[in-house]
Image (cartoon, rainbow, N blue to C red; front, side, top):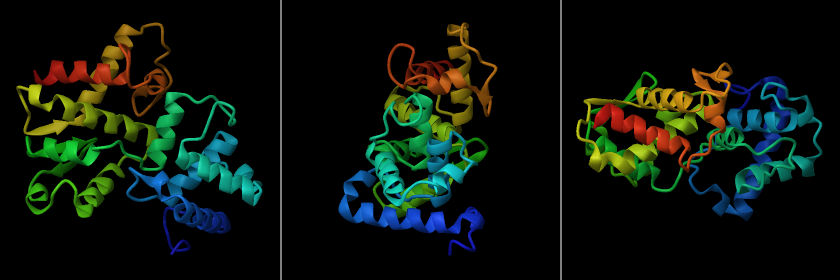
Length: 245
């Protein structure tokens, strides 16, 4: 299967096998570490390990030089949340979002929040990829595995892990504010909300360097924690109020 995957670099086939083996061991010993993770994309996990070891997701050499116990411990740390500031680089919110996005980790009640949102509109647009409310919510409940799989496939359209997590944050704050939204559009555009929030952030924090960006979002925004007066969730809430109240 790995050799025929178009997402896995076959020249590093042994490292993929090794990662799979350690994943299996960790799941058997401590399955609770995988709460909020429906499935694991091996290509993203290996890129994450490469980035943690070399600082670049495309440079595999240092990862391949790890001793078996070192690779096992790193994988365990990633899933247990044990990565710290002593592990190669500072533990910033951009790094946390990159890790969570690469692991496909979702917050508690995410699927219920999204299901509830789909009940109020005909669809939700994720950067040009629209998930339609119908027949999805007619055929499935929020707790069904098949609903979660559909949502996972939809989120996988976003290839940048840290951007994916910002969209997850957008969905969560939308869900918490949905009862207060007066003008629900036919299709909720997540990108419009996120970029509006980012524009407000840049206006408030003019001292930040907004030149460095990923997909139009400045690095300063990725580095910003979710909570607090100047957190991303606050800016997303303001954007929602401006667009839909």
